[in-house]
Length: 587
Image (cartoon, rainbow, N blue to C red; front, side, top):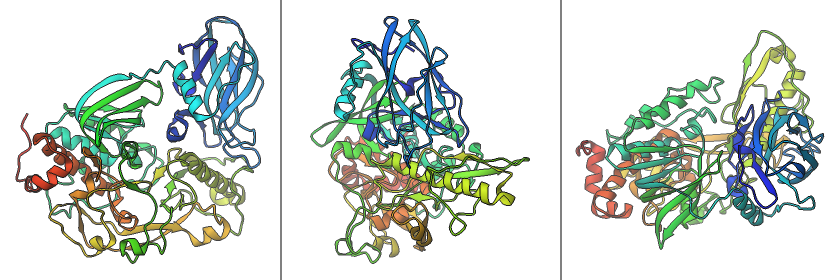
């Protein structure tokens, strides 16, 4: 590894370590850090060292700085690790400062004896120690910047990230977000003959249905008014392994990628986080993404863009109108709406599972985790959807790391209690898998030409531009009452009331932005109220939205019009495609 050198600085971004060992890359907080980092996710067992080789401009004494945090400072967390230089520890332990903010920690003066030096991070606990970057400077009095704007500029300079990223090409449609919605949108458009870029910020496709999150697909595809819809969703569907299945293969990561790679018109870009949008007036011209491991930046230009990020990231960056939180009854007229509008959102889940072993095993004490008792604990060998944090206590976008960490403190604290206090039942069980990527339900909803509401759903309204047929209940989560009793303000367990709906159609006008002229959206960030979102958000339904976006983008390109123009001038042709009456372009 050869980091780009500043005047007297050697910056090593840990996500670009050549050998991650047992550490994993986490980019969920890129929106607030402008960087990814690596984390020792060992579920209580120390992981293998992350290691790399670094070229120094000269040997001699350098001041080492380590950018990290104590993720569970109650009063001190378990995320302890050491820095190893050419096989020898610097002697300091990081990650147990008692301070929960990311900052540079003084690693002291080290003697670099070899121009090519081997670095390693040694995890001491397996409990999610994390490191963002290492800085070596031969200016022994230098202190690196920690304020975000200055730090970002400092990083960009030392990483030699210019204002001209690598050109990734021009496409008819650029899809950002490789969950079920985005993957289906990309395949649909590609099969209609468009050139498509599919950009995903993780190494796998499927989003919440990937092996990293492990949520099963819900919503029916066989109740559609339109026979063309749901076919690509079925290709993506790996059956129903349930939520949090300990077997990663049950979620079909490799198969999803192979389906995408088989499409000749589709270019796939994994591990790429889109953080910048270029536009002219109300038209997006390009997006810029950064590789979460190498930090290489690429620019994707296109005629049309589809925001399938879930968080509405592209729309937000482009200035699209959006809503986050709950509307009031007075605003929407919905009986299920809140009395007053607020910031309440459905939460994020980190699922987990244990497996049976032949021998008894122990689990470490977790004084830094949430504490359970005989009076209140969760007596389960695996999680389901109820393990959920958010509910307006945390911002699901800007506090994604804190939400995940709160979930981990609940999971590990409860498991430690079960292992110690219910040994007859749990002695031979072992944690097999804990998600470190959060499965989000709700964040931004981008506003389209129509905002779907509760009445549309319950009355089964069929608008002329009705497209996807949705079947899931209005499923709005809230903190479980008993969990609130014991963890008021820190809830991590949810309840719900399923309000049945008749199959209803989602208008096409909910699938494009009201004020950004060439922006489609599909997935949980489409144009609905909070109440309606409780039904539209499930993944088979979101996948069919993606299929519609693919068809509509074909028509927009064919007639050189906008997503709105398709609705205004070419709706019969879109409906014809959905009915299977119009042939797709032939190769």
